Length: 215
Image 1: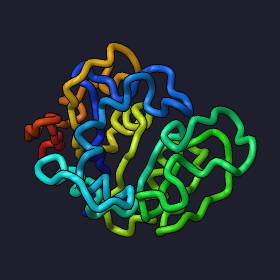
Image 2: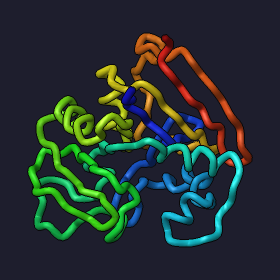
Image 3: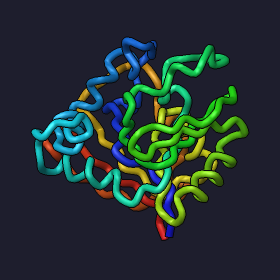
């Protein structure tokens, strides 16, 4: 059965999924790059960068698993790029170059319409202007029975959580404090949303926490 999942989402010990002041130079906000120090050395990430080296072990296992059985992604506009307001032109096509790492349809939440972008490797960016329910309906149809991954950023995950749409989350808690930025769980009651099954696995670089809704 298809699931709606958050996987390999990095978070600080004080609950922030991104730092403040996101920009083209600092797409993860100030200090936000520290959150991903568990992920960047892995063989999975290095392979995404067309490199052959990389670490194996717990972190790589979680990185590899995060891409398994994914038929579609949903992300917020801030994750797609730093541009705000109406699209000035069609030049910006994401942070990831000509071959993004998704290889499936990606549905980008936005208030400003734009034609789909077909990229190399099977990724197509679709821009959804009529809300998260519409995006999820489109993603489920595109996924064709596979899982839908909610990619972020924090605001997008919070919206899907508050709507009760997320079935499972894998969060990688990095051993850093950001002190400010975008907080993932402020005002959200996870037990009330049904998340009662908690699994924790430790690596040298992160605590991998898997939260599932109880049956």
